[in-house]
Length: 451
Image: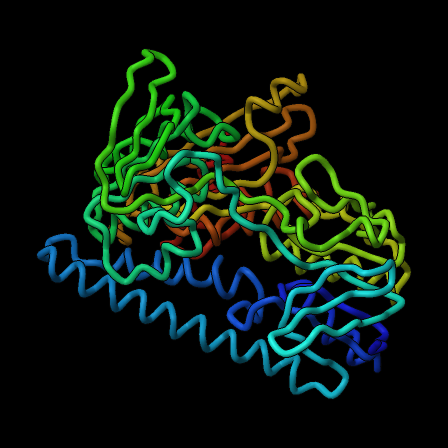
């Protein structure tokens, strides 16, 4: 039995930041990570960084190149992605492993008792004990029970497809959510023919229909084909058979590769949480209170493993909540961060903060809505990307911004301006009358907020 002041299971954003914080305070910390390819967590290795590196490369791809040239360019893009992730992975490992107060264990961790974690490494099995334990194991891909996908070398997840060095001529994507659309946009830009099979009658259901329609229109201009109401029944090689839920017709898509973009769920099934007295909900997410304590108050959860929004910046904010709870006044809690903005890096990116128009109307709020086509923004013309739509919803009684959806170039940056205005309680006129640099996408907020 090896004893520490704290054990962290999972090398993700919140956990690794917390490890350094604890070490600065002379805590002895055990960091448990199941794979040497995951030092630094999901974002660095299989999430934000590799996907956005590929999105950037895809945006620079020569649309008039030959197929052989597109193949070569894609292979170089994958190699560049590997260089970026490898560099960051190494830096993250040494940032912890070189700290005398932190010990990194590369192996699978599971609870043996409320204060004990069993770690199976390649060489041995060790028991670690600590009065405080933090679960930071992230999320994993949902694999649907579709005939023909198990052990099929032509079927990929959002993780494994980024290891594919040969550009597929035709990529079939099962799932038309955010992950599916991001990969659809990326591979279409690289030069693949892309078909998206969505089981429901509409794309990205949590967005307003005018925004979703704009997204679909822009992606269809890239050559992406959408098959809605497509209930996938089986996969044979890279051929996907599905049933149209409206007509009942059974149809087939012949592809070269199949991507499962069917969602992600908390990675808790192998943790033996029952031994620690930690409860989960129906999706397997660790149940926590506002200070991230589980049903065992000595065990806390960080990031995707507790469900909710799956973003690395949420994991980082979880660290801040834990820091204040452990060493401060303990006043910071999960609900303090709402609303939270997000971006989906299709081309152009889709970003939003706050509720949808449909949600606002369901709540009976007195609202006013304004829209601005991206083609009306001068900066969009200088960037050569005039696709998209900006939309804002304001409370007509208080003049406070309820939500903002930005589908257009550089929206991932502009949404942060709106978020700061909302967080600081500004009225919409603050952005309407703000002096922005010109030409910039941010200055479009002057017009968007001009009711």
